[in-house]
Amino acid sequence: MAMLRVPGIALLLASLSIPVLTGLPLHGAQVGENPFTLPDWVSVEPDLSYGTAPEQKADVYRPAQATEGKRPGLLLIHGGGWKAGSRKSVVRVYAIPFLREGFVVASIDYRLSGTAKAPAAVSDALEALKWFKNEAKRWNVDTDRVVVMGGSAGGHLALMSAFATKSAKLGPTSDVAAVVNVCGPSDLGELLSGAHRQDVADEWIPDGPQRREIARAVSPIIYVRKGLPPVKSIHGTDDPIVPYAQTVRLTRELRAKGVDAELISIPEGKHGFDDRTWNEVIYPQVFEFLKRVGVLRKS
Image 1: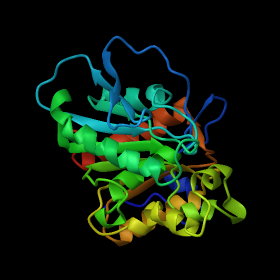
Image 2 (image 1 turned 30 degrees about the vertical axis):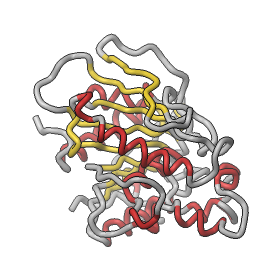
Image 3 (image 1 turned 180 degrees about the vertical axis):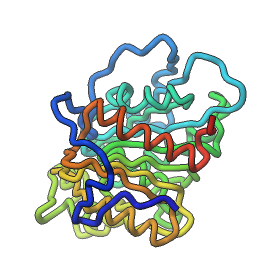
Image 4 (image 1 turned 60 degrees about the vertical axis):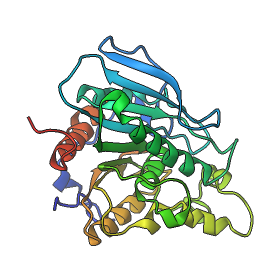
């Protein structure tokens, strides 16, 4: 099993050999950036519906060049504190690197907190994953090599789409090959009060006597169990929004259950990373991980 890249809460950053990177523009994991012009080697099918609600939309991106055999697939979930962001805002930073590796990428929208409170966004992520796998033949996607990924709230939803059980009754459950979690919260109760309280969590989790129960039901940490798919997490050690300690704990508990789980700790990293960190630190390790777990074919 791969070494856990967390030094506990006391940081053994030197062991990671990852430089602290500054001076480049940040791409917030929770929102991303405005849409940009797609390169000519990418084709897109926009505005596909995976449900009946107007927000339940997906854009599916494919490398334009034909390939022999089936492609791996990525369900990409944007962040924004469950209240903002869009499926188009994460294409450059998140989708393009996967497209270069031959993936078909479905980037989704979901109901935000201004429209529907928790657990609506979780239910939408589960529905989107089921839809993507059901429609896999349409894009020549290998259903055994589907990955879910997101940043911040999107990371949380990616974890929930892979971890949720049928008994939780949050939506349809589907198997995935791996999860890539970028600074997603795993314990929503911690974000409702105390030192780590976040307004966006307060707005997403509905008020009422069942509030703590709902927060628990949408917390990935409670679903940790044997047999979950491999999980690669990325988190800045100085994240002011989602506590780094949550991902440390999640990774440790997954490993204690025998789940293949790794954490890339970004020294002094905040809630979002610059291009150099993505290109030189994060993506090389993510794609090596996906090769190791069999999602990407080794050359």
